[in-house]
Length: 380
Image (tube, rainbow, N blue to C red; front, side, top):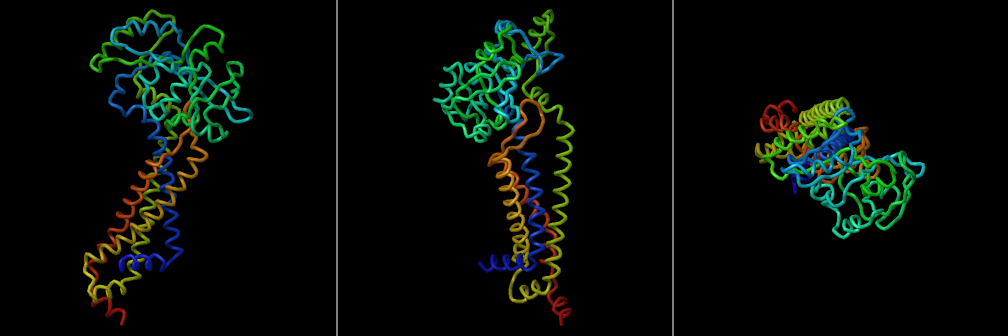
């Protein structure tokens, strides 16, 4: 208890300096939380060991914006080693006068077998409702919060390439990368198109991970003479292609976070060093009345950790409040809206605590070596 009282008193000794240090740490943590939000969302679909067995067939030249004939799905199913094929088409829509968003038209039966992480958080009853109803959609959580929608609501989406169409919300889509998107039935989308059935991409699952290269070779052979030139990519390559246009922006943000983190370390370290120098007499008195070296070390480190923890909480909760309510939008392609999660806040908080320990360690080591006689003689 005495130690906590000393930490509190020392932090309040110079309130403006403490406040500036808190704000600098909070700013670094907020930027870090934004970066981790994007990184975690983009890699959520490829962390599973089974992700290597998920491949995609797309237009070699047009990429994700191309169109492949629906007959290509039938050809994929004929290949030995392929057990599920998932059509994936992008659907651009508007909601009233609001900004445009993008949905994905897909097959509800094949989706759980190929992209389990996307639907793992949806209650079974809601997903079954989505699967059975031709007009049902799974709506991104941020979209639902923004327009105050709830499961069971029927809304009209204004299509850009198709006529306006009504949909019924069967459930909320909690997958972070799709927080501002929606999933609809591929059959419904094809009916709205009113032309030859097609898909932007065909995802498919290879039964045996040892046969992935063999299946790739067989697909290349079978599709070599098809009218639309195709390529086979992994799910990791697909994620990379989604973010390709933001490569320089991501590098800039990463560099910015590193610079800000280093600057924060310097600020926090300088704050602790100044505080330790100003309190050299207090430290000497504590030593003279029985405080051991280790206890002084713990005292100074506790101050550094306390200020880092408070700054981290301020930045982490600020990031959660801002990015969870309004979302984080970065132009990475169809999936460009990101929702921060509690785990990301904890990761950012851990970084803040590490910064506090690193910044406070030099001052703590100096406090251990304080010369009582020299300090008190200088004071006299």
